[in-house]
Each structure stands twice: as C-alpha cells, then as structure tokens.
Image 1 (tube, rainbow, N blue to C red):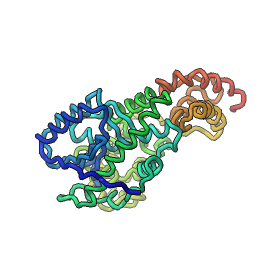
Image 2: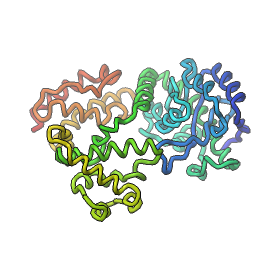
Image 3: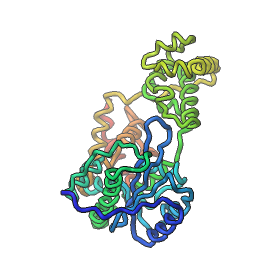
Image 4: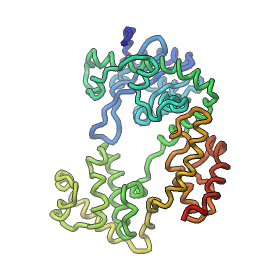
Length: 382
C-alpha cells in the first residue's frame, strides 16, 4: 500500500530556508532525514536534507545553501523534538555541514527497541510494520549529488520524511505511555555526545582489530602507522581504507618490510597504495622501529577467554529479566561491551565492581543486581 504523496517543497536559497526554519521552530517536532554520498571520502557529502512536519515534506538542497545559521538554530532548539531513524551517519552529516547536532533527538529505531520490537530495526521494515507501506528501494544508492535530481529521487526522499513523521505520531505516545521517554532521550543524548568526539590519532592503533596479538615493539610501529592513516584520511578527505586498508596494518607492524617489493607482498596491500604511499610507509615503519623500549605502548587486553562465557551469561540474564519485565528488547538493556567491561573488573576470582561503561539509568536500575549476580557466581567461574 502506497498512499498519495503531497507535492514536496524544494528549498534552494538562504532566505527560504530561514523562513521555513522560523516556522518549524513553532512546531512540537520535525522529522529529519539526509541523503549523502560517502564512497571514497572520509567525511559524508550531503546531497539532500529532508524535513517532515506531519503535513508535507520539504527538501533542502545543501549544494545551494550558504547560510546554515537558521537551520542550526532549529537543530539546537530544545522545544522542538528532532525525529530521525538510526541516525549515526546523519549526525556526521550535520557535524560536517553546519557544525551542529539535533537536540532533543528521538531515534525511531531506538524507540522501537524500547517498545519491544526488534533491536536495530531497519527503516523499511519499521514503515511496513507500523504503516503497512512497502517502500521502494530503487534510489537507495543513487547519486544524490547529481543535479537535477530525478523525479524518482525526489519522491523517494520526500516519502522518507513524510513517513518518519507518521511513525513519530505512533511511537511518541507509546513511548510516553510506557514511561521510558527519559531513558530514550538519555540514550540519544549520549549518542549525540559520542558522535561529536573524534578519534585521537595517537590512540587509533587501539581500535585496530587483532592489535592485541602484537608485542610492544610491534605496537610501536602500529601506533605510528595508524596515527598517520587517521591524520591523512581527515586531511585529504579520503576514506581510511582507500588510503591504507586496515587489514594490512597488523601485518605491516609484524613483518616491518624495508623495501617496496617487500611492502607489495603484504597480504591485501593495494598496488595503488604501494605506488602512492610506499616510501612514506617505509619511513613510518623505520620511525616506529626507532622508538625506545621505554616508550613502547603496553600490550592491549586480550579477548575474554571462553571460561568467562558462564559469567557473561549470568550477567546477561539480569538484563534479559529487566527487559522482559518492561517489554523492552533485551539487547538494549545491557550492551556486550558493558558486560565485558564488568567481567574484566575481577575475572576470574572477583570481587567484581561496576564498570564506568555502566552509567545513567542502567546503573541505577540494574547496578545492584549485577554486582550481586557477579560476586555470587565467583565459585562457578574458574
């Protein structure tokens, strides 16, 4: 079922954007979506901003707008709820486009999980479940930087904004009735805060998969390579893996090639990288090898052993019980990283304490139960 679409409005000048933002700031909410391109760049390039006010969709052309201050005021207006869906990349778009984040933020994917629907529910599936509408997917990966946009692109983008507003009309009251609105807005505020934090290049090596396997001397090389990759990707606005694939980082740090030929034999090393960055990479490896032992990074924590699975299961059950009691998706109550952080505070023999990763309403709701469960389970975890 696909209902008729009210003809969307297209905004392509600063004055019209300012007028519209003034009107939107009088509303209790606006639904916000973005279309962007991010195939080979570090930062997303905004192709379209969509606003749904419950009556019609408005499309903002970011290639024509030069003054974003009225839109910033809308995003930061605490009296207007901004409704988005699974918005981590949208937040990056706003940060890059106008240096502002939407607050307060109502994420419909998160709201669905708080209401016991599937965790990480995709937008199309949510629209189908709540509105009984099957969304077309033809334009999902189209070129949003082309001009003029096709009629199909315009309709696709407008429908997203229109349906997002309709979904909020359904989920908003349900969240209020369930008494979890404060939890939802606390989680989205945390998401906004985290989105505004950039990776410290000198600590980028700690995020590399399998880095825990490396010795301190190898980590010294990895630290130099990962820091260069992070800085250069941002400076050139090039996707990290286009500059240097992550899968090559640990092999580079371990094998430490000293010639271009040896560099080219590293698994997954792209020939383009050898041609353009080869001499630089060899210099970086030499730089890492020259680090004094006293300056080596400490080895990174290993993954928890299989023996910890029993305790993780015990702790996970605390979250599952709370979720069942309140009709919330179990995955949202206690994230894996929180459970693992708690296990690390005392594994294998305890005593255990609450980790810093557990805070806010989750700590208040489940902190005591988690402590009791962990420390009572010590005798069965060896």
